[in-house]
Image (cartoon, one colour):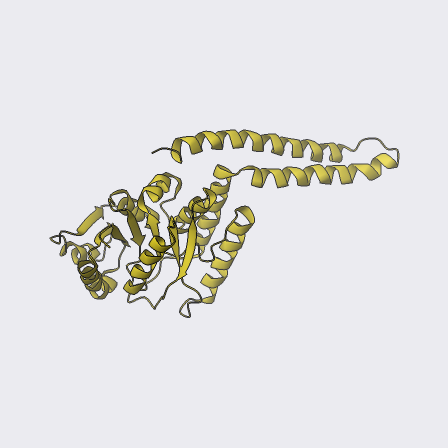
Length: 294
């Protein structure tokens, strides 16, 4: 596993790190893989827990003076990764190190570009988070051809050169997990799932809330507009055109001429259609600059 780097974003996880990080260090020593830990401006002494391992040759430590967000921390770690593969895990101890090996074996076995750790039905997850995850996946599936069940899983293993290519498209927030998976899917890379085990967090509290869900939905819409804007604009345009026609036909059959409301609906539909075409051209330019760069 000397071509694998484990990337751990850390923000105020001192209690978890005291129990979890020594196990990660031992795992990396035994398996010959590398470790990249990104302290994202922690204020609880997490950096001190990480800093004591700087002497290890296989450990890279990155420190953000100011909190950049979950996605921002992952971006920093992925950018400095030099191995063929990289895997992201959380610092709260919920992910099993045995799953690191199983996902690594899967990406090699299937020659995949991204393997998503499918958490299945995690009994420790509250009902509101389950509902939120289901709604996010439903919205993503409507807008994009999503085949992955657990797109917002924090445990994913990537081909490094590919994930580095798409970092500029991803937000610095918790929505990173969803958007990076959608980027791989939209660009027709081989994305597969593999079951993993998730346990209760060792310590600390989760920062995921309703704002996280709203932010994720907005980022998914942004992703669709970037890659396939007509998937949004065309249905809206079609709705207005059909509504305008249905509104105007009865009035015309009664001999009362053309309805103003009908014309407004049709014209609005045409405007949305041409706006979608212009957005398509702009998104093509951005994709050529960001996605296709080497």
